[in-house]
Length: 248
Image (tube, rainbow, N blue to C red):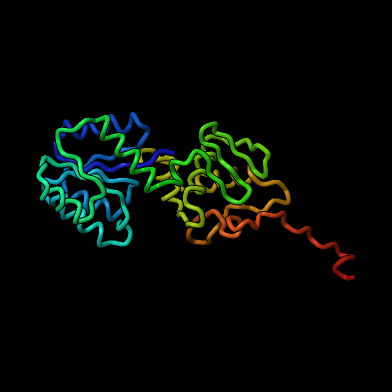
């Protein structure tokens, strides 16, 4: 599953170039041309990294960055600021409002993508790791193999993406809309009931008869990777007591 980058840039040609190069690196990219529109969008949905131009119509990049740092949901969002302002005082101002990195135009696209990769590794180590583990479950992203307690599991492509999504944020409860956006993507229309179908298929693929189910259903809220499973309590479920044992 791709990491998501939002680019806020009003120069159309540069926006297209950034999208092309970031998508070539495997990222999902959204480009927004106005600062006020970006401010509203970032309140609705937070990407993994923000590329932010300094001078924007509607609202400046500096003001957007300042607002982001004031909200708990975006206080730690990685921000790379793009600007034609190369003076030391301007760089200091950009960094002082909360930008994590500062790139002066014109810049090398190769260096820029290297900076994005480095920041992604620091900010999202669980999302760029080649192996994800939770309890006795393991995903090897390089080979697309899934194992539980050492045995290899056979998952369909959607079930694989769904499990990977859960394992990137263990313990967090996702509603169906969030799962649709994260696994299927925002550009594909899928009925929310499809989520329930694929969660059921995932459970069938990863659980044997006495395995603890790592997927927790939260009534009225959605699904999560169970905290008890994460704590290593993934031992088999106890057998039901027989009538003779119950009556002793």
